[in-house]
Image (tube, rainbow, N blue to C red):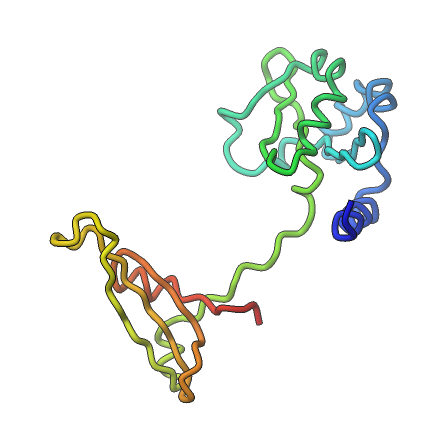
Length: 187
């Protein structure tokens, strides 16, 4: 385990309390589901560094339809496998836990509970030009449909008075490229 992973687990534990093991979660399954339905989040671990979170449905982002579902009784018996699956670095898909085909809670990767990095700053083209910067536009063909304009990519590059790159963006047209202007480094 690398130190950033350890720090992430420490952060999760500080925010939500220590995780409980799979066997303890199985023993308390009914009450944990009731608590999740009421808004309580529970961290569950398997083999120390495989963590998942039992969360209320309100903690599941997006639309619930189309997500994998597991009956509560099946989830209880397969909890170790579900925690291991949720802990995989490529697995970010919540699993809905259902009672009589009605979702009541979800099992998610514990990493989903960590704060996301702030989105990169997107300055407006107007603000950049008003601030004394210049914006250069360039068109490049992507190789398909270039004669109709359909295979082109427009790039916008903003530079300060000294010629240093301040922001860059690209899109299918000039408006999209200007809207996509993003600072190259978080500031």
